Image (cartoon, rainbow, N blue to C red; front, side):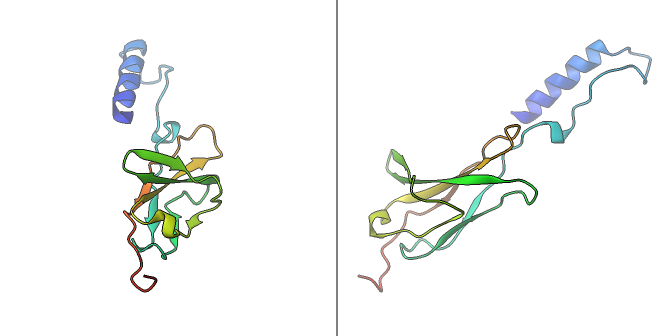
Length: 126
């Protein structure tokens, strides 16, 4: 999608620029001008007692994580979870845990989802 946008932008600028002058005013589109989604990952196991920790955020940007639990087609936000880590409970067995990073910079788009699961019951607890 972003490559399609870049091609359309470049095509538009080529049509408006003077064909023989390399110094003609125009716009150039750099990758930094496009909001690329950040790819988040979750470290931890698929056992319900494993600590899940999100990573992959840019070093020079700030933002917050939103955590979700999904079972089948039901997708629920875990509003009480704050920060880049989550400790599942017995309620999470059989579900997938996902997180998304929401940047504070409104020029950036939210991240892709990181996912763990489906979570299994820890045999040492059973």
